[in-house]
Image 1 (tube, helix red, strand yellow):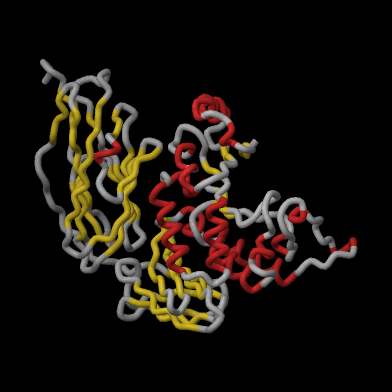
Image 2 (cartoon, rainbow, N blue to C red; image 1 turned 90 degrees about the vertical axis):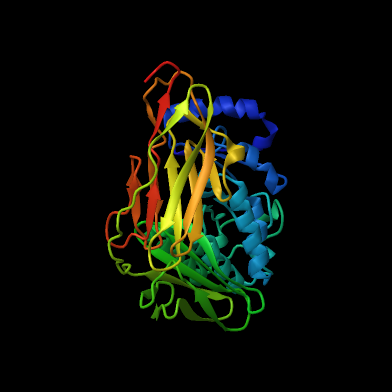
Length: 415
């Protein structure tokens, strides 16, 4: 079994879910545990801390995206979606069931006043943001309907006299194919680039260690031109290809200028990044020690030694012997499933200090090396992993240096 969808998960205690998870994961760690949790968006969080469910049916996502596709200001969608991302651990975001309707709700087409142009626009956003997009059977061919049971209409099979909308089906297939072809759209990072309420324009970037994808959307009825700031993400002269329509666009002056038809968008894929010169090595302070039985403040240091502002996505893998004091995490840093995550924009020449407190298991012997593995994805699309305490600056095109203090446990009476 690839996974389980648990009905009315909120009717079972958290204790039961914490006992159930190890049982399911022991069979296959990749088995998905997805729950139906109804109520306010804040009700999702207790199930998504890494010890209960992997994800839930995200009805809040449906409300936000339908409001946007119906012409709501982009800032309303962006604030809701990014606020949710900040409140939920990163692994859970990618396991969320990003649905727009279900067997218990009115059909999405009806929620959009049966406007198929709005539905096509909605699909562009649904298939390009983080999470697991979900299609309720028949949406892809124009099935409409009100609340349960009207939403459960039969599929309009052509050979049985039905009239499936094949143009709408082709659109779904095209956008799904684009998502499947680009890893950044499935599991990459996400950052908003443009929110223009007056012109109904919205843009964001998805990236991983392979590629960068800019998605630009217009949820208004009139055409418009989006001037999208991409400093720190894409270099001047970089050419992006529109995989949804056709044509190419070039970064100039730190921006992409993109014309957009009403209720439509573009999915722009960047080519290979330009290479920066090799970075010069640097040094930092001497290794630190953790006293027996004490709380230790550990500091990661991130420096942008490149020529321009750039974005960094940092992941710190923690050994099982170390637990993090969550309340001590700096702004922008989250903890989940034995990892720390930090995303941020760092200006040229800036050094960012990321201090946090840890507690070490009392059974760990003296002399053990701790907290020594970090991976970073920089603004040029490079990923670098380091497993020792030093400055890291290897390879052309690397924008950042990271410093990981060598930390050894020192027990009382031990060397």
